[in-house]
Amino acid sequence: MSSRKMMLYILMRVIILFITVVTAYSLTFLLLKFMPLDAVDFVISQFITSPAAVYQDPIVINTLKEGLYDLFGLKGTLLEQYISFLRRVFIFDFGPSIISFPTPVTDLIRNALPWTIGLLSFTTLMSWIIGNLLGTITTFIEIERGGVATKFLQSIAIVLYPIPYYIMALVLIFLLTYLIPIFPLPGAGGIITFEFSFENIINIIRRFALPALSILIISAFGWNYISSRTLTLNIVSEDFSIYAKLRALPDSIILKKYILRNILISQITILALHLGMIFSGALLVEVIFALPGLGTLLYKAINSGDISTALGVLSLSIVAVSVATFIIDLIYPIIDPRVRHR
Amino acid sequence: MSFLKLVEKNIASLMLNTKFRIGFILLIFIIILGSFSIFSPPYYKQWYKLPIDQPPRLSTGVLYILGTTTNGRSVFYILVNAIINSLVIGLFTALIASHIGLFAGIGAGVKGGVVEKVIMFLADVLIVIPALPLYILLAMFLRKILTIYTIGLIISITSWAWPARQVRAIVMSLREREYMLTAKLSGMSLMKIIMSEIFPHLLGWHLANFTNTVLYSIASETSLAILGLSILQEDTLGTMIYWALQYGALYRGLVWWIIPPVAIIILLFASLYMISLGLSEYINPRLRKLR
Image (cartoon, rainbow over all chains, first blue to last red; front, side):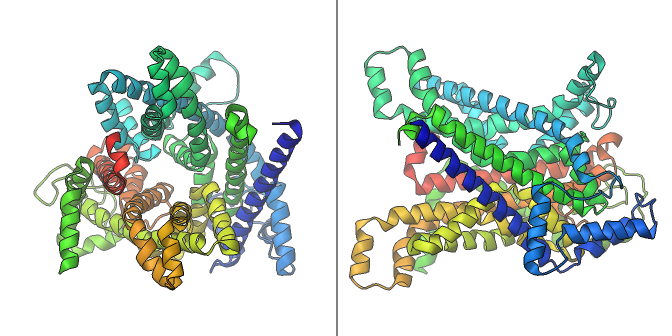
């Protein structure tokens, strides 16, 4: 693809990204607008009754109210409200949080974000690689030589596929902290910080091992395994693989050059479509293991009725998932020559 | 009568599919377990009036076969109530969302033009947005009027999008076929074409999708419940886990309280997934070799 065409492709994708995000925010705005409850009164009443409200100073409450009216865009005409709402969510200005009052929502999110990104990127990448390699190789071996092991793996995959991460998390907690106490109970095992020391890193690994494992098992043996298996079965019966076999190419080359490459492409598309779901699942795993990420922040926000923080996490999720999908779309022409030449 | 025969014949041949058979039997087992909910004492329904700090026990009599919780309720009856309520949420969502998806997809596929563009754009946006945070925001506001049915409605808001996309793809491929042109040229009305030429092709797919939506909706309700945003005074599989976690069942070793809902969720999801796999294989014989 010429560089001009490439630029055009990127530009188109940026426009689509922008429209998607604006539409998502507009939907949120409409939903907030037509909610039968007055959002601001709801938040204020939660704030006054919550234990976090040490600042019962009327001036503080008034500033809070002003900020909320601004955030929910309740000032001026409908159009003005809409624009002010959009402006706020685009520059990530959600005002002060309620769970730790004077701290802005943005600061809370900034502290929580690295943990979530770390957990998510590690598990998504690992499960993608493990699941696809396992699915492709075992299916290939099964076709070539037949095998009972794949049958067994597949039954496991069918059971694991529909299970949410947090259910797996509960099962793992039961098995590995209650029956065989190897890992610390959720929430126990020391405070973790961003500090770079040996002790802290060991702590982080101990705290994150089980959550990462519960996401890994489900997404590697669940949809990565199942979909790569289905794809392998399809590709093996395609003309080019039959031809390669007739040419007496060694199995390893057929697997590497003919099958894995094709699977890689389709699996990246599926990954882009699943990101939203993976993200939501990971948030809940964080809650169950009391990890200091976005999920736990959201949980705390919900339990004290802190709508501004919840809205902050929501907008960030929308942007994060859309941008991740966008990046995958940009990688796409690099790995798939068919897209490049179109 | 002939319709009944047809259903009977189809189910008989569906039962030949191993996945469908296992899933179906599991589901029947779970429904039978759930139907014990009829015998549950009525005061259980307002359980928050019960005293909260009773020592949880294990197996003392038939009623307490799975032990009791911290407010002295039988885990068995909570479980059977939870199964029924969760299934109702799932079915309600599936009835709404999968049908909206079906008709939006057919509409987009048949009409084309602006209608198609708008519907598909909306569907694409809803697919990209992470659904859970959206549900959370809605559930936070609607907490006071949250019932089994409003939960179903909240989940329906996004779960029609994916089916709509798929239905449209199927309808688009049907649209190009010869017999559709014949039907159009022979003067059949649009409605009649949809009903007699398109719908039969979608029926099997729609059933599989219906099952998937039931699964998805029960899973979403459970996710909301774990965050404490479901109908906490009602028993569902999700709220059961929520309360068990709130009362520290994991830390105190009250395994009989936390294991049943987790086990039932795993069984239920596996059974629904196998049913939908079986249905897909049944309507698309090419998938059968992928056993």
